[in-house]
Length: 382
Image (cartoon, rainbow, N blue to C red; front, side, top):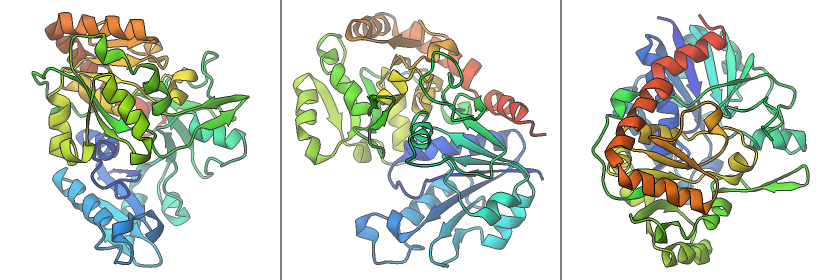
């Protein structure tokens, strides 16, 4: 059977099923198209959390998280976790991994996470998939990092890369754009609840980036702009927010403005709970990193795609995605506080209409079979 491989980083983030779904959506989507699939991850002692240090990588919480995630997704025999310092693999052994890669018409290397040249060269075609548009490109242009060599194509979820309106540099590459896929069977439409919600981190793994005389920041910088929102819309607003205790002043700012703050590990720390949290929402309040907003990159969240598939409307801070996606029903965009309030009120006034529209958008624009078939065609993968 013809295979497709995806490489990425599930093991390094135990208890973060939303991050895992980034990769599972591609794997299950390609599987639905009839491909044999393979996931490649890697783990070293530098990557594991403090509580696991000193033990075996093979028995670490990170390795166990990946194994459980793949097993629960029905992919328990379709992954290989590369261990550092010659410790071998968890899951598929290296020789089988190489055999599978040699049958792979495509290796999708998410954010260039896989750097093993023998494995990269085994696949028939290699595509770099950028899921954080702006960061890697600006790092390269300012000399902080270099996009890896050895790829035949470069793909991004920044829908506007290459357009004059987009502030993300192309760094001399032709970028193939794609929306994130969502497997509709995994995200059935739901009735929903009463609150606008979202799941995420206050700062995330990256620092702000200085480029062209400007500083491109994080989600924290955007959320502060909309701190008053829950006091102006007649509905609860809740964030399952990973926020460091050192940011207690920001947490107080949110609570003082009627945001409910939940611990994401408690309410959405495993795949079933994550799905239940999304499907039990009235809608998503989506406020992304300012990098995506200020560059008008067209970035659209894989998490928001799951909300839409679940029939949960999305109220999203504009990143320029309206050039590629329909807005106004089911997916509403805003650029300032007044527009956010109006969008929230519109959803509250007719949630059933916006719910149906949300699911329809997912079916038309994010369904994994459609999205991945189009991507393979653009990559000229047979």
